[in-house]
Length: 79
Image (tube, rainbow, N blue to C red; front, top):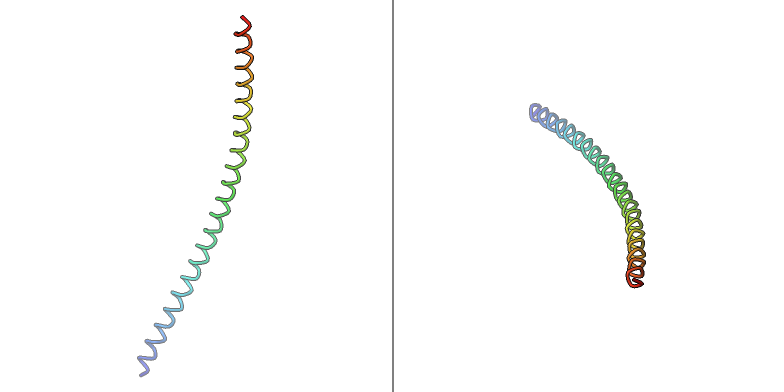
């Protein structure tokens, strides 16, 4: 009986150690996940800012091109 009790006590201790290790691992994984989510949000914000910047630049260049094309058309039609 005493030997069984000792074996159960050892098993319980081992299970407690395993549980503590798994809890620590879970905490680490949660921190990593939160960090990656924050990095993703920053990357998405950077992407949106750059897209907006270059969309405006493209729109400006298209307007300049259309204006130049219009003036070229006028010059060619005068001659």
